[in-house]
Image (tube, rainbow, N blue to C red):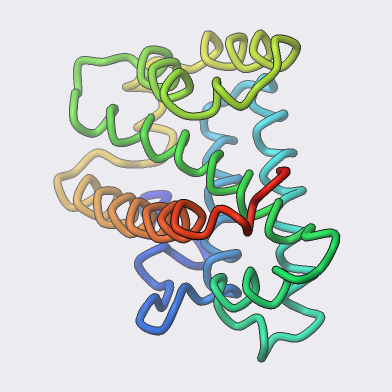
Length: 197
């Protein structure tokens, strides 16, 4: 049985980052993350999926308006920088925050095999998204964390059991973490890009 990371249409390891992050491949790989939440088996994660899907749509709409000019995430953000409404940039900002939350939770899970998913996701949430969320949104996410399946059940669902499967998951995660770092660095060094967001 193939692992989840063998079945995604595009893995983060397939995203070309040599001249900037390939926008189209990044979006395809991120759609895989949205489906990964299905394996958590709780409707409580629907809010996370809907948020990610909405942000993917914002970025894809901008990309499709001029695929050549917006071929990388960096170019897309730069091209939108002088506009009053920076819809795709805001979408990318929130998408990266959501991906950072997901990546940190999965990294904790891979690193500490004794830690249950509800702990991994809760700790990741506290270190990433929580500070950006209002007191109205936080309880929704807390509920989602509590609804996480047992770690062993999740890994069965995504068919990650062998050392080879774990290595593939680790490579996918490492590539995602590198992309998150690149975009977070871009926003940190050019804060004007996300001013007022």
